[in-house]
Length: 162
Image (cartoon, rainbow, N blue to C red; front, side):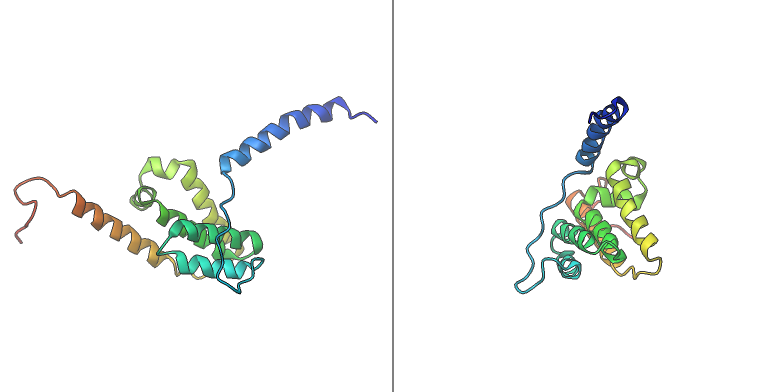
């Protein structure tokens, strides 16, 4: 039995669109290695790994939260954790995000990051937002580190009188 011409046309249009959308979203991150004895099919184990790696390696934490979402898609804190980790992993994006830089806020990357927050709030409006502290500490740490690397110019660059 032959497919009707309309079906063929729709498939010819839809398949490239779907594949380009997938390419735009980026490939899924590699699954991080879990500690010995952890269950690789448990979203909770990946969530715990993300929490433990957040301050040390936010990129690995983001990957762990990503896999926690995939294995437990109704867990709001996994989406929230990935949002925090992705912001912490890129100091430029984090600074622009917190300081309200329009170019950063309008970027596709930040819109994807914000969609994680929307998803988390949609799933559970009352989930604990306990990782915001890590985000703010990272922002100020990066800010101070940048200021120490590039001192301001002028006669009072090193000392200021009160």
